[in-house]
Image 1 (cartoon, helix red, strand yellow):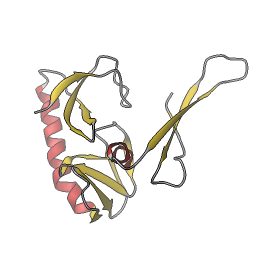
Image 2 (cartoon, rainbow, N blue to C red):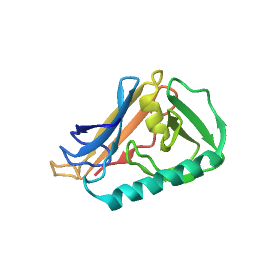
Image 3 (cartoon, rainbow, N blue to C red):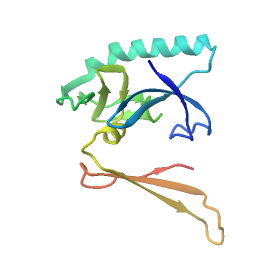
Image 4 (spheres, helix red, strand yellow):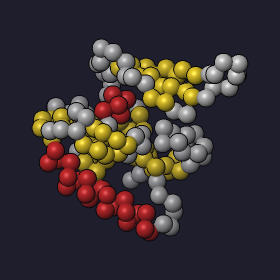
Amino acid sequence: MPRTVTAAGSQRAAQPGAIIEAGPELNGRVIARPAGTRGCARLAHDQAVDATHRRERLPRLIAHSEPARGLLQRHRLTGPIIDDCPRCGWQGYFHDYLATIDGDWSAAVCDNCYADLHPDIMVTVKFFSARSGGRSEPFAVVRERTRSDHRFPDIGQQLI
C-alpha cells in the first residue's frame, strides 16, 4: 500500500512540501510518483486510464528483456517511443531502453531512473551555472550525469 510522504522537491519541479505517493523501496531508494490532488476524481480516473494504456501498449514494444535484478528489469525497445517517466517526470523519447519495477508496466521508468535504482551502477551528478558577463546571478543551470556503465557523460540538461 503506498504511503504519503512530504517531498523537499523533485526533478518534476514539485514545490517544497508537495505530496507524492511513495511505493516500496528498491535497493534502499523510495520509488515515488507525484500524487493527484485529494478528492480529484477526474485526475484519478485519467491516471487509471493512462496506467491501463501503458500496461497494454508497452510490452508489445519490447525486443528483448535483460534478466531481472531483484525487482528491477531492463527492456530493450524495438524503436524509439515518446513517453513519460512516472518516477522523475521526464517527458520525451525513450530511445533504447525502459525498465519495470516488479513487472509493473504502468510504472515503467526511463533508463536514467534505471541507473539510479540499480545497485551496481554508480551515478554522479554535476551542476554548472552559466552567467553573463558582469552579472552575479546565473541565467541557467546545467546538469550533467555520469554513469559507471557508460563510457562518456550525458550531454547535459538545462534546468533553468
